[in-house]
Image (cartoon, rainbow, N blue to C red):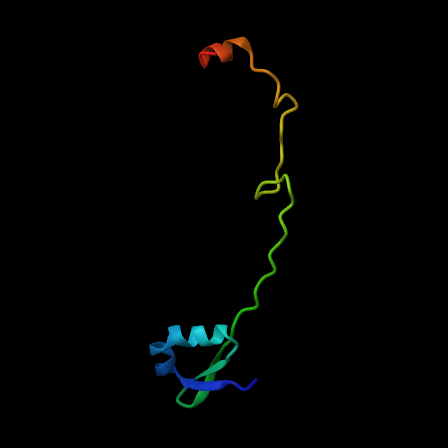
Length: 81
């Protein structure tokens, strides 16, 4: 794919539109005094890692053995039960 050359002033004043065009696949070479200085290209999308069921974002999973055990009487009384 051929790159379109834009001068530095145009790149500064039109950066938002250039970025939008780059996102669609275009490439631009930014030149200063007619000499190429930088290339504006789209980043490759990073592949999203599949989420492992049962893990939080840090990958830590801990459930106490007595998680679903009945609450002690004194705790139930604190809740008015």
